Length: 268
Image (tube, rainbow, N blue to C red; front, side):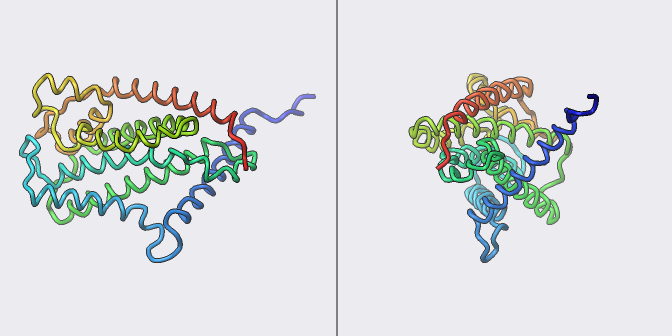
């Protein structure tokens, strides 16, 4: 009979509502597990990355470290190190994330992707709030100028987050198949930091070095972010099309690998 089966749109909406609630519950569980209920609790979500960023900014300022331009060192450090915190910490949160949450997998609505998503959203929120608060604070006291193109800043932040998400899902899935992923990622993340564009301008490098660092997708995101911040005073080198294709391929690989390990995960 007509109308006897549920409409596809209604079914999709209901599924989306369930997954939203699942991810929301996992998010709250992650906040309480990681930061606890005492002292400032969940405020550590963004206070911790703020402390790291302020520490690096202070060291760069006191040491008078050059970055190949006449841009303000505070703004340069904030845009650089905040962008690193956005993508670098995400894989660490997903590597080995399934093991501690195996008991939750008994619930049929809790999927591997939900566990990853909760951790990644929390990490992205902390880095974003930290970057926003520090930017507004230093703008308010006159140490840095407001961004010239807020649209570019937001788009660059989105692209860097996409890179972090896709890399984290792939690393998290691979870590369920081999413990060596965890041991490799930590030194690799430290090696990637000086190459990520956080501490240098691509334009200040020799042409051969420019071609090398622009192989790394996050460099394109940092360059776009700084172009949005500094505008005409900054000569950026980036190809967002390249970064988008790289992130899309990384996302497909991560989703495929996650689907593969989802079939083998056995709840405790």
